[in-house]
Image 1 (cartoon, rainbow, N blue to C red):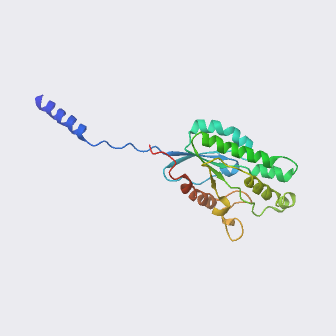
Image 2: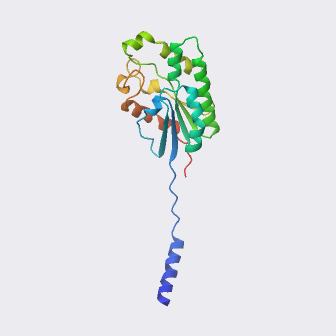
Image 3: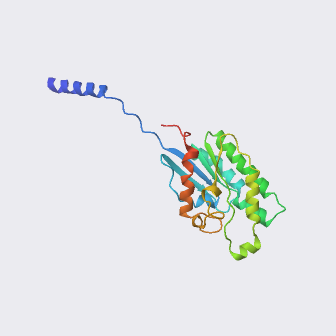
Amino acid sequence: MAALKRRANHLALALALMPTMPALAAPCRLLIIGDSLAAQWSAPPPAGWVQQVHGQPGARAAAIAAALPAAMQAQRPHAILILAGSNDARGAALWPGGDAVAQARAAIAGMARAGAAHGARVLVARLAPLGRQPWWRQLLIGDRQSRAMQAIMAGLVLPAGARWLDVPALLAGRSGIDPVYRVDHLHFSRAGHARLAAGLPPLLAGHCPPG
């Protein structure tokens, strides 16, 4: 019995003298929110991150903004990627006399401010001009949606600390967006998503706290 007690004491002393192992850092959390461009996101998260995708196909920026508070409360993201405005631009192309462009600017800027107030690093994806459209869509909309996208981006003011994910630059080909990066006139292919995801780490670097 005495021998067992001595061994237990030696084991307890050895454990007490062992160096403390550092706790593993919790993954950083990325929230990707937006319209169908977010809903179809197929790339894995950057190293050290986990991601949650909240996409609303067909939604305008105001509807996406309305969903953001609940998504932030549920996910508590360290960073937020916003992909919004393409449906507002389509609305502006179909009804040029409306205020879709101004509404999109206000909604996207509001989301960026809300994310910054939450303490997240906010990334806003620049809208890229449309690619080759079906003939009927070319007759109906032409280049008006692309011009509306450009107008939304040109008038959009982001809060301090927010950053652009420069989609047109990342996916650029010889003339506009390289077709390999798209599956249609608007949406991105798996290669396109992979290329965009490769642009995230420099924008996220140094933001997520360890542990």
